[in-house]
Every structure is written in structure tokens, then in C-alpha cells.
Length: 234
Ligand SMILES: Nc1ncnc2c1ncn2[C@@H]1O[C@H](COP(=O)(O)OP(=O)(O)OP(=O)(O)O)[C@@H](O)[C@H]1O
Ligand SMILES: [Mg+2]
Picture 1: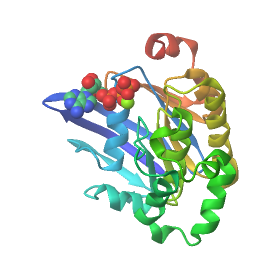
Picture 2 (picture 1 turned 135 degrees about the horizontal axis):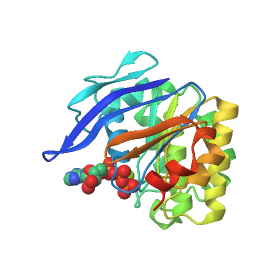
Picture 3 (picture 1 turned 90 degrees about the vertical axis):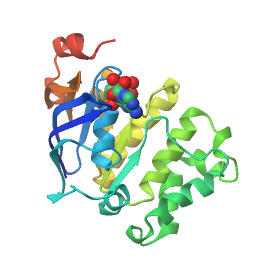
Picture 4 (picture 1 turned 180 degrees about the horizontal axis):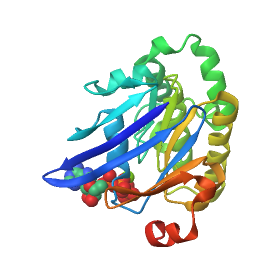
């Protein structure tokens, strides 16, 4: 589904990514892990076309993404939920959701059915359709951001630290949602996540980053305590 080959990227003259490679297969949950500041978000932004890369290659279903703007990448089927969620606080839940499908309407054949599916996944959103995004709790905002991204009709969903700053019961809900999207919708998911237990729960494979480089990767079952201790534990 997604292949990232040896990305190098600089920000303000410093090397931020030093050869990041990763893959996410069809229907797979790939966890991109690492401590604060190692380059996880920069990797995702590079995949989305929100950040320039110095070298490296990116492919979605074999198609080269080089030179494509973020909106073109979204139309090819990448849904992106940024870190911090980025919902529109002064717009209602309904308006926030609408941005998902108008932004990318052509991929969704039946908007009504797609909305019902979102409400089934996140019943709380249906209850809050008329409320402003800004009054929602962190967990509800995360659900809204995921719902909005799903309404673009993605093949690959990219989530940047969806559990950050969210209470445990909602974290569990988000974990269940990820598992459901993978199993029932065969969605591929690239998940940036610092909670090792969460990755072990929902992930198929992992990629561990440290200081801009991949230091270990493989099936999630092969993630050793040693790697966790040396590269992931805070
Ligand atoms: N706009 C920017 N200007 C300057 N430096 C930046 C910018 N964005 C990121 N960096 C630097 O690039 C490095 C990687 O940042 P990035 O946001 O990719 O890390 P991260 O792994 O996502 O961290 P976190 O877990 O805190 O979200 C950090 O050292 C950060 O300070
Ligand atoms: Mg980040």
C-alpha cells in the first residue's frame, strides 16, 4: 500500500530525517514509534507532501508520489489526522465532518451512508452534530478528526499520536476503532504512537525511530524489550 524509501529531510539547515524507510501493507496497521523529537511527524508530513524532502522516494500502491501536492495525495487515498487533531473549533461537528467529504467528494459515492458509518463508529458525534468543535473533549475531538479523515474515503489512514492527552477509556475506544477499521474495512493504517502497549495491542508491525533514523523494525511480535528500553522508553 505505502512504501517509503530512504527519506532524507532537513529543517532550517539541520538534518531531521536520515534515511527513513518503512512499509505498510494492505489492511495492515504499521506503528511508527519513537521518543519526542525523533522525526515521526516530519516523516508523516513528508508522506503527505506537507514538507519537502531532500531525497528518497514515496509510493502509494506503486504510484510515485514525488511532486504531488498534498491535496493530490489525499485524492489518491491518503487520509491524514494530524497531531493535535486540528479540528475547526468555531465550526460545528457537522461542518467539520462536511469538510472531509467536500474536500474529497469524488471518492465517496454515498455521503449519507458514509456519515451513518461514522456515527456507528463514534455515536457521540451524532449526538453532538450541532455543537462547536471547540467544546468537545480531547477524545471527542480525536474521534471527530478521525471521522473527518474517513469521509475522504482513504485507502491509507495516517494517525499522528491519536492517544496523546486523552483519557484511558477513550484511548481504549480509539484502539477498538483502529482494530475495527483494519478488520472490517481492510483499511491500511500508519499510526504514530509512543505508547508501546497500545502498539502491541493494535499493530501488525513496528518501525522504531531514534534521532531521525529507523533503528529497528519488523512484526510487532518481534519488538523486544531491549529495543523498547534503548530507543522508545521515556
Ligand atoms: N518547524 C520546525 N522548525 C524547526 N525545527 C523543527 C520544526 N519542526 C520540527 N522540528 C524539529 O525536527 C525534529 C523532529 O520533529 P518531529 O516533529 O518530526 O518529531 P516527533 O517525533 O513527531 O516528536 P513528538 O513526539 O514530540 O511529536 C525535532 O528536533 C524538532 O525540534
Ligand atoms: Mg510529532
